[in-house]
Image (cartoon, rainbow, N blue to C red; front, side, top):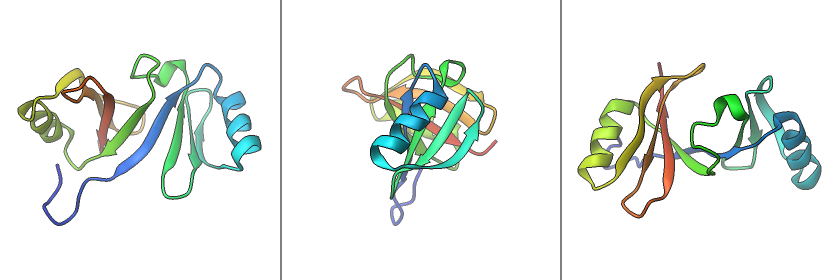
Amino acid sequence: MSSENAPTKIGNVLHPVADVGAAVAFYHDTFGLGLKFADGDRYAALDAGSTTLALAGPEEDVTGGVPAASFKVADVAAALTAITDAGGSVMSGAEQGPHEVRAVARDPWGNTFVVYGPR
């Protein structure tokens, strides 16, 4: 997952939304967040300073409607092994998304998060 010298960073904070376009407008108008990337009604990434606010439409909602931190890792399979070894659980195993490999897991306290990495 990460080396001892460089901790894994949160790649984005995922917010499932029913309408990506309306959510982009809301976060832009309310907080001034700029659009970094959009994939139609599926997904949008907004610039929230040192992190990215990821808006996932129904087609890309991998967490079942739960907001979640998303950790970018070099190897999703290795990350899932480390998660379960440390007492976490895998909710949905590694799958190919439109832009990356991703999986959904929970920490030992039931908090949902996403791990994702290159294809």
